[in-house]
Image 1 (cartoon, one colour):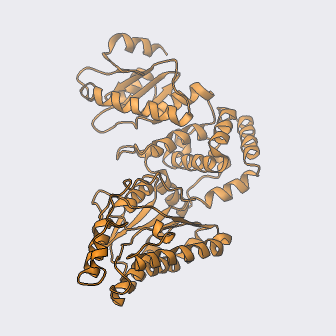
Image 2 (image 1 turned 90 degrees about the vertical axis):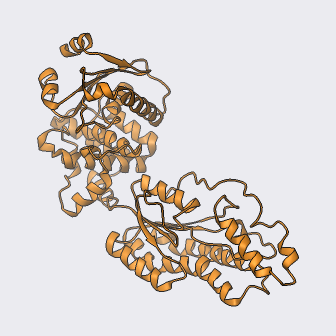
Length: 462
């Protein structure tokens, strides 16, 4: 391209490890050059890690323009971004800033695998913008593809896959605001069904171009990779489009908070339930509710079904530890322990299971405890609630298997949250002035220093 050398000779440049960033004097890009460099380097490393490679033998030339008119006049290219060879051309202004991943995915993927079918190339770029959680309000086509595709399916606006695969996505006939998220949705589906290795093998095998013979050949390769006819692939893919939703109880802190954050990052609409307020910046649908309130649970589940059509994931995490000798803990207090730790999770499951079946399956995760396996003195009520939860979880796992609903049980040891202080307080209160008072003063499972902070490595909902 003739303009590349001309711009290299005339524009100032900001250099980083993997980029030469060229900008116009006095532009927003000049003022934010350091920020741009950091964002691009982070994107570079993320994309290399996704493709499982450690380095590339070149630097990327990034040319940043103030506006679309200047960019088109100099390069002859319309649109906000463009990539070819090891060069990226983008608009960078107060109102337009291209996602730092999108064009870079093209540069790196084309270098590794060669040019591929447009639906896969553009779909992967949008998918990774979401995967790396780098969406911005200005992103447009790179925004949350899941919600867009779900809406377009409800409106009957999605293209048949055969037509999607024939587009040079980005041209006006492809209706970019539909075809970009639709392509990303299919890429996500392909990665899920074929695995990363299988998807990348298919990606590398497809040819670039929209001539009839190329499209037919690409469709044949896709059918071979999936082992199914394209119509069957399309039916299965469309069945996965519904917007994903999850319910997490005990979402204000600890395991529940980190699990809710992870699901939100993964694109789920998350109902975040806790008797305490959830963090304002969490991003889900916060509901303040005491799980001892059966009518409140019923109303919540009715609302969930009405607003999100149910959920795909239930994480029953809320609970507390009622410690004290079985003799001294009042029956009403013991009943409340069973209500929150056992009956509330079961009630939530009962109320949301019909909608989960209608959605084609899902995952239920019950957070138990090592106290569901190992008993200790002065923890009878807590152990009873967790033993009960473990028993019903094992039964559910068998009952729900025919409906494609998985059931998991997690048994954490003590973690650094307010839970331990609450359990210790309940122990001392139940023991004060009783024959167990001296015994209760000794170190117990609820008063020992926890071994590790709550740090779930991520929930795989399917």
